[in-house]
Amino acid sequence: MTERPGSPRELASGKEVKEPIVFVIDDDPSMRRALTNLIQSVGLEVEAFGSAAELLKGKLPDVASCLVLDIRLPGLSGLDLQAEFARANILIPIIFITGHGDIPMTVRAMKGGAVDFLTKPFRDQDLLDAVVSAIDKDRRRRESDNAIAGLQALFDTLSSREREVLGFVAAGLMNKQIAAELDLAEITVKIYRGHIMKKMKAKSLADLIRMTEALGIRPTKPSSEPAGPR
Image 1 (cartoon, rainbow, N blue to C red):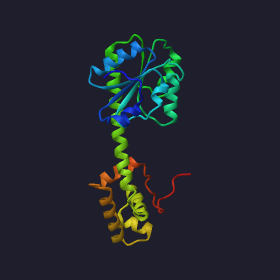
Image 2 (cartoon, helix red, strand yellow):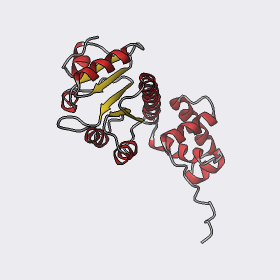
Image 3 (cartoon, rainbow, N blue to C red):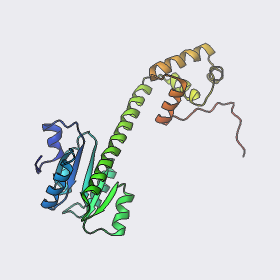
Image 4 (cartoon, rainbow, N blue to C red):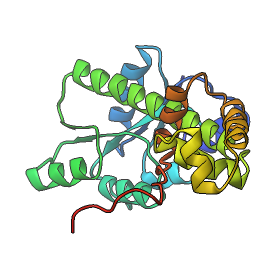
């Protein structure tokens, strides 16, 4: 694939992207070509840009990806772009490359969430290892996000009463205890629990508890629970 001066929007609108992609931003044309050829040599899609502004013209495709980013760029610097992504909650893993690295710059980049910081000249294998690791990290994050989104969609189908019951189930209460807390018949609670299991597609109680933990649902403490030490 030859380098082109377009933006990620070209990928989103003109070409459907399903495979992982690496974005390269470096203002040195020879470095962009070298990085593009190197990354393509391991079978990865590459889009290269001469500035951060070029990348920001478009929308990043919804696939596993990472960014190989030079620190010093015309206009918006690499560190500034990292900060822009953080403000916009764009979680693409960033690998910084620079010929002028120093300790404060490295610390700032790593504190900002960069996955690696390579000083030119770096070994080809070091960059490829960093890229593969970053792509894998982004893929795992996306899978986790999709799983949580799926669980949230299931949780949203629960009625308000079923959510109340689920809170007590998460706290480890038995049907009889939940019934007392909600002033319901024990058989009614049992029915609610059955509905919850079915709607959440939980295979077991342990499975349901794991779902509540993943969703960040806090267990509902029973009103009869003794107060802790003062």
